[in-house]
Length: 300
Length: 300
View 1 (cartoon, rainbow over the protein chains, first blue to last red):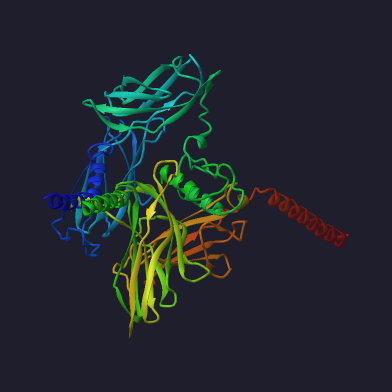
View 2 (cartoon, each protein chain N blue to C red):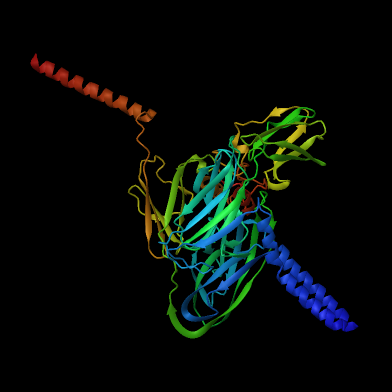
């Protein structure tokens, strides 16, 4: 009897484990920047639907993107790393944009926003199989709030200004990662802007990071990038003229990470003594790791 | 009882293998177009990646093959998730390995099929086209594969290896591989100057794409010089930028696109030009003076 139970148990577990990848993937889709919905329809003029795909290119093929960014902010859609479309969100932060005339293929679409101060959101990617003659709607995109600080180093006890942008009139958490995480709450105004003056007395000397997260109906919708700062003996205002320092991988200091920066890094690939600016992980060589850091910060 | 213990040990072993394979490691898959190949027949092997819920942004790897049984014809990059190649696929010096590396800007976590969103699909890294050469059983397998996570730090992640066993039959059948999609190539280019690229000399950077058969060749012509093969970033021979640059990308079905990059507008106010102008004016002055004096003497 025990033998039979064990045999059945083994079979059940093997079956469950083989199903594991699909479970993990489903979770990832739902735990994105928000509940992103992807729907598709075959256009009346034709198309074959499904995963197969014909090669027809004359059938209307559209991918629609919609969601929330920041009021009157720029939203950029990349297709395989190249800017495919830009739009401006309306005063309530809603945006929608379409890309047309696509052939049957797999496209790696990415979306990011740029706030009123030029600070970029985290980029979200959607590698989608597009079949000619279909319309695909990618909705519910909720861009992460932006965040920055006014000082690169703050004297312990001095105030540190944390600011950024998100959707208008919403609750926002600011999280400081020190020895213990410190959480503060604020609200965005009608323009989606927020400011918070942090008393740095409770923060220990050393390096810290701060990030913000937007909450709608008590649910965390999106988390920002992490911004570093130092608690020290003097206060130093952040040097906004040093634009190269704000975006890792922006090697020619034009506030973009694109083909030009990639070409500069590619020139140093496997060469000895690369300049410190190119060697992003400071290991004295340009490898896949440096390109990976660049790819993460890619703006097109 | 002894048998029962053995089963438990086997079960734990199986559990460990399956958990490590499905939950932690991304997997490379090799998908051949056929398993039985004729001598002279071209076939392809799709190198696919399944990140199993992780988001990756860099791949570097080697595919090893038996060069006695098959020969490598060409790579097809068109369906690849990699949009920027650090190293385009090429055969190494020993002639039995294909090396390549590239990045996926903003990351890749599996392809979404909008008509079947149950789980994300593997994405194509590269399609490798081979030709049967000599009858017999042979292997094609992965070697030295690395991937990086899209985490902003370039974290290296482990990847499971894959091996294929295929057979070249004794029959001879000349079958040429043809790409299903026929599209026109696209080409973008820009001349840049940067202190970290070719010692601040004029350098042409370019990117060619073809969604169908892929790019076969890119050639360049500077002024009256001959056409020659080019790779980005390309150090321009004519650093004066007085030559018209022509760049041509050709796909594997023979379709081409040519891009003309205009020379720099003539800089009249360059110090050298002003100096030459002064010399010219002085020469003219003395010439006119001499003619005037000659005429004057003749009159007297």
